[in-house]
Image (cartoon, rainbow, N blue to C red; front, side, top):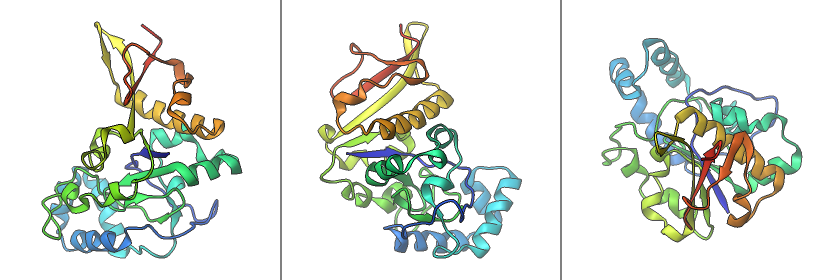
Length: 246
């Protein structure tokens, strides 16, 4: 089993807690993306990033001195978004970290596909960014089927957002992927709320690691944050968890 998770926009540097265990598998492609970003003007970068001037300036300064091989942070500890806070890898025990080392993979617009302890540096590049590079019109075309090929031979538990999972789903067979949906009833239909989904994804990853989950059947037992598995709404390839029941 491989668990797919999206990255977070907010990142930090932590070179003390745990050392990185290696470099990302797609570093040559990342170097091409870095060269493309460094060739862009500040105005072009802010447009690409769709962010405030303050955030743009922070990441422009990062680009000027970015080193992809030195002073790196394990990917698992580098991302600071909601789902990573709920996963809380910084307080996990060794056996739980070993579970994530084996099973977790993080999709990234900049790095492609990351193992939890690959060394990374803070960057800003979302998968849906309209960056044309190496003859590709955008990052989905740039990465093509290369990320999905790294997942072949495993069944995939998809906990990534649609923006990121779209980088691999066209190339994986439907029967090899199980997607989890976290929603709640609102006006007679199931609604997915962004923040709650992120919380649930992070909490599920933590629960998977704590319980050494290996099979789809076991995943049905997830019941944290008031979510419960809905048998009627779920299918073989999509598990639906409803907050608070019907």
